[in-house]
Amino acid sequence: MSSSSGDAAPLHMVTPCIRSFPISAHTGYDVYLKLENLQIPGSFKIRGIGNLLRNAAVHGCKKIVCPSGGNAGLAAAYAAKMIGLPAVIVLPQSTPAFVADKLRTEFGAEVEIKGKIWDESNTYAKELAKQPDVLYVHPYDHPDIWEGHKSMIIEASQQMPCQPDVVIASVGGGGLLNGILRGMQEVGWSDVPCLAMETVGADCLNAAIKAGKPVTLPDITSVAKSLGALTVADDTFNMVKQWKNFHSVVIQDAQAVDACFKLADDHRFLVEPACGASLHAVYGDVISNLQKEGKLGPVKSALVIVCGGSSATIKQMETWKNIVNL
Image 1: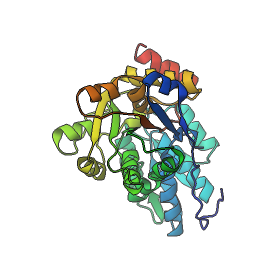
Image 2: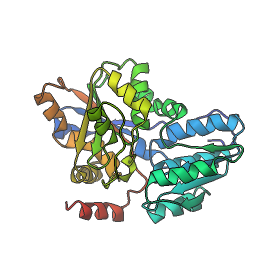
Image 3: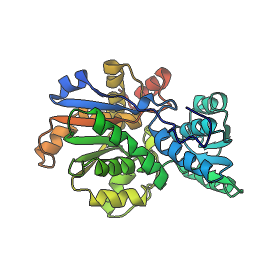
Image 4: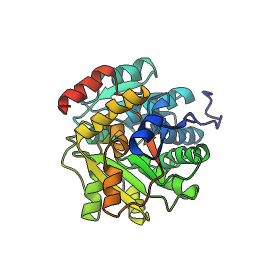
């Protein structure tokens, strides 16, 4: 990867899309895992944010500011380092200290801690970004970000032996889902059901669907902090409304954390509860329940986006386990 902004090479890796033999044996159908946890900054975020920064650098951006609880900040800091731009990452107080250390020591970013939750960090970051030639990097709500994220579906369509019967992803603010749906349209999967997974206390999409419009959650109470957007992106909500076969499912924190441990046992990967939410769809009874309710047809193969997560360490996994009383 080049550090020259004139080089159009993407900053993300083409990740494997593997058939999970242990999960497939558990479900009775083929489960494919798109391993975004293998991206260098730790999550899928580098696809969209890398695309955004590449475009901004070409148009004269001299510095970036990104408010983030972790994954977006790491992606932004990594992308900025590779392109050669200084980066300021604004973290909420809930972010683990080792994430701040990683941002500084590995990617050379300036780190500021502002606010209890992301929305407060965001307000401060917007002020910083009012300086000339400074790019404000929203973690999920920008067309260049969605365009970058859709690349994972384009890759998966070339890696899988057949079209999946369902695509499963976790949802926070909606950037990942927005890219997934755009990618599915592009590769001819518009008729494929999409299953969006959230946890109680970080379920802004489900709340919006119930209300018929985007609503703002009072607080993020889930351990899945990476899903912690108070309001889903308007564009994502509008895409969801138009999708032919879309399902929003909300699960408990304990179910998401349990799926993280099962993935660790099955594949030796550590991921965040935000990622565990999507994995619970195949480890738990979500698919079979939707089929019993007549909402989902036969499933011979499923594609799960393993979105990753930079805060997943052995120590943190044990902490999550204790919090949810597993």
